[in-house]
Image (cartoon, rainbow, N blue to C red; front, top):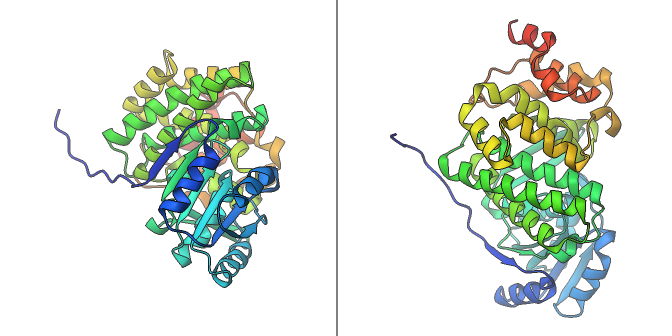
Length: 367
């Protein structure tokens, strides 16, 4: 076999250890020589933010965090950071918190130390996203990649099991999309495969026993592998769909990814045999889709977009918005007709295998 590809690795420090979050943040702030720190966090992480304020030079604490990072929220946070003379942003929370920190860094260049408390994975990518007038714009920029990530499994203990599942499936979606995204290559495919393996085992352990420390460690490790693969491979069909659903219709980020994933997999895997083999192997199943659906059943995963605020009447518009963003390299041609069928199945919660073999999908593919 002859290989030919170009792979880019995003540089960054990873500090991993349960119970070590505060200690590791202090070490990074000192290493960076920061004198005025901005802590970006949500209300649920207020206790940790207070602990940090006792040991690092916090000049500003910002708690106005909104999903999909509205442009006006980002503008206010940037002004506040500039006026306060901030030299490091410490982001404590999930993907929305990290996303706001990235929006600040995008125009100011202020470095980020990320302390994730979910499995969103944004902390390990150079991808930013901003929403204005119901449209989400994303891009890549090295300035938004955190200079350090502090992983502490203890910080995920208070994450409800349902949100742990949705967030973890979001991370698995990073892996699956990385198998056929525009810059997919053998290196990020290997990272994605191991990410799926770690996440599946970790999430099953967390669902079985919420306080399972080993499970939470494995899920966090899988999250990093997933995000690293995604950062290199780029954004594929799955993420293009979810960006529209989140940015235009305000759907919750993690739950949307968790619902959409099996339908993208069911549509794509027949045209991506290498990805099929990797997914099946990582999940210990005879088929990739079968393994994914078995995992979703074990985790009691979200099943339908209609349960999260998406209206059936919005399907035609959403399909039009998505189709122009679909990477031309996707293994199977994607049309508005295909997207309408896929979105309707995801809206209704139709079993993914039934969708894959439906007359509606066959007709859409053959238009």
